[in-house]
Structure formats: structure tokens, C-alpha cells
Length: 287
Image (cartoon, rainbow, N blue to C red; front, top):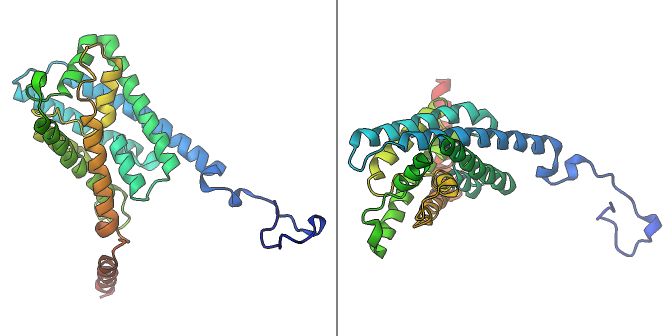
């Protein structure tokens, strides 16, 4: 590689050459980062298989008006999410959700290439988990499709109902992504040790709040997996709701986080407040 500091008119044989080392390559091209990302992809893939398996199996016997079954779905999904996050947190940060992955990429925490890899394996993991459930019972997968598309009056849904469903998914996913960013990832967080528990609770609360209206997805991969494997003719109806809502919620939350809530926020006044709080904490610790 030529030394870029040499003028273009310098004779070719007089130019200096530079040896390109791994430090000169783009960050993603270094072997260490490559294998770290590969390791993270395997963690996200296998964890997503288990999450999808638990999600579909807990929904297979949910009745139309069964509050106890809804509670079972919420607890099953929330607890399994928290457990899987705790086991993959040190490997891939335990996102297990395309919307959460989009959020951390928008927040500038994860490299876009790494984020794209995670998103792909999350979808593959969800489809694999759904396929494993279909080996047990094809009706279980179709039930999962039905209850993750739990819009009232499915046969005649108007625009206002669709917009409301998107809004509900925006709100519940915003809660989840806010917990991911502020509790699990931010280095200034004082609750990182209990982040998996809080994340599990946020999923449980989100499902309990919206299950009777949207099915409480909060996770595009959890909606996509059963749709890919299922055989129901209506499995793709209104599927876009479960991508548009969570992704909008994740992007908005990530933007708010970077502007105001991060340990190094972009808005100057909030950045100054964080510096003052840190100085105050250090002074209190000294005293």
C-alpha cells in the first residue's frame, strides 16, 4: 500500500510502501472481532431456538377467553427470555430480538454488520424452533400464529384498529428496548446484575398488557417463525404490524436514549448534568 502522505508527482520507484497490518483493517475484519461475532451469532441462534420453542408450546392450548392460559404464556415467555439473556449476556449481550438489535445499532452500541448478522440468525433460530414444535404438533404452530395475530374482529379490521395495534406494539417494545439500553448495556447502570430479571419482567408485562389485542409479540422473530413454518392460509395476514410496531418502538427509544438518557448523551445540557452527577457521586464516595 502506498503512503498517502507522498505527493502524487513523486516517481513511483521513489514512493514509500507501508505494510498493512490487522490494525489498519476495518474493525470488523480483524480475526478477533470476526470470531467474537461468529460466537455471538451461534449464541443468538441457539437461544432463539429455545425461546421460540417455549413460546409456541405455551400457546398451543390457549383458549379464546382463558385468562389463566394468558398468564401462562406471559410467564413462560418472560421467564425463558430472562433465563436465556442471562446465559448469553457475556457472549452476544443476549438481544434475542430483531427489534432490540435494531435499537442497539441505532444507538451506536453495536456495529451495523454485527447487528445484521444477529438479526439474520435470530430469524433463522425462530424458524428452527418453530419447525421443532411442528414435529410435535402442526396445530401448535398454527395456534401460535393465531395468538400472535390476536386482533379483534380479524375478518373485518379497519385502519384505526391496525394503527392501534401498531401503537401497542410500539409502546411495549419501547419498554423492552429501554430496559435493554439503560439496565443491561449502559456502563453507568447500577442494575446490570439484575438486568436479565428486569428484561424477563418487561416481556411478561408487555404480553399481559396486549395479549388480548395484538397477541403481545414484542419480537418480530417470534411472529415470523410460526408464520414461516405454519400451514394456516391466513398466517401472513397483518404480519407487517409485528415488524412496523416493534421496529418503530426500538428506533424511537434508541434515539431518546442517545439524546438524553445515555451515560454520554448527545444533547449538551444533559451531558453536563451527567458530568455533574458523576462528580457528585465521586465526592460522596471520597467523603
